[in-house]
Image 1 (cartoon, helix red, strand yellow):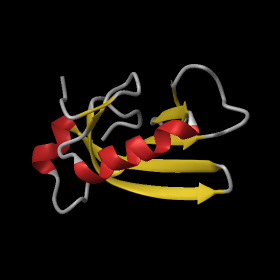
Image 2 (cartoon, one colour):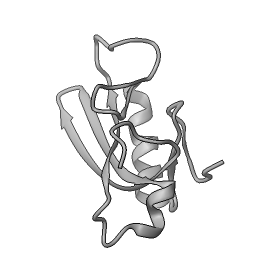
Image 3 (spheres, helix red, strand yellow):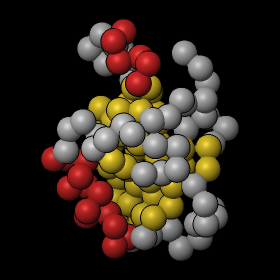
Length: 105
């Protein structure tokens, strides 16, 4: 397994943290080439972090962290919609440009 995530990835799990007016979603998933070899989530890894409502966002563009995964800052207004997408859509994919989609293409 590489250090840098190879996108697109299939989102398999997420964790949510809400504190005052900032929310964060940690996305875990499997690189598409790893799907066949995955055994009960053994190959799950952090593939992205979305922060909502940060008054001091890191920048205008999404970026790959030193840990090799995508870091994204989004408006707090998008939090509810993204939570609905994560809870209700399968499969769900994350692309390198920060797009969440029901298609790997």
